[in-house]
Length: 303
Image 1: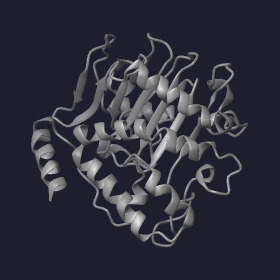
Image 2 (image 1 turned 90 degrees about the horizontal axis):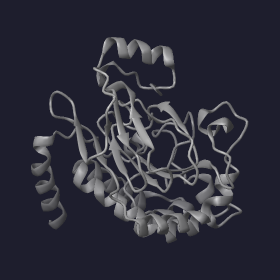
Image 3 (image 1 turned 30 degrees about the vertical axis):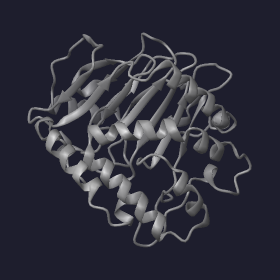
Image 4 (image 1 turned 90 degrees about the vertical axis):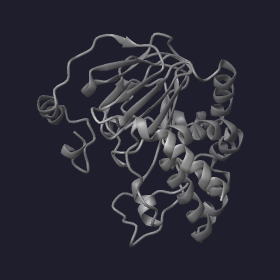
């Protein structure tokens, strides 16, 4: 299926999704997966990791306390724009709701690496009126680092390429904001999307390669919540403390229920940032190859 996807497949076009489902039919499985699970394709490629309840209550409480620094920006994020990411009727009525992206390096829309330099996302810049995002970055450093470290096991090559990208940006940038933010950015992912009390429609993630894994950490909320991978015919338990890592560009995924006091930290790579600093794109991970990749990664870290 990955080969059939265009470069800008967002997964929000229902007609296009119907065509893809007819071309790549799956046997619908109505059972809800509640145990730790690896989802593989026919060749053994790991398409998703599902780790329900792996994040402790203490970890989740620390995350929520730190996220309070972002509440003002989150509350301002819902707009009347046509973007489904800020569509008001997808958010539950609550004292805090919204979705914001934070990144130490991104290219403005329409800008390409060979002509422009990446920038720090607006709310992380020193000129931003509210210091909350930078305070969150410092307060949440341990939680972000722990979640980032899980990628070291799930996809060692992706972790290594993300780390290499961070190091290259840190040594090459002349941008003052980036020079300040990169040393404090404690994850190898280049985007953290913070989602609060939002029903997420089915979509794909455009900024990455099909062979990469996004990471979703659910904090608080409904113990009966689930995330659907519709084009696989799979539902995964999405209770508080669950970690899901998935090929976000291939898997059409969404969380359709509206629940209160539910937070999600969604971590993504940005392909054009790696392209901009000349970092090699890593490949898929197959289940049988994972021990070898982990051993190779461990050796590379000791050299």
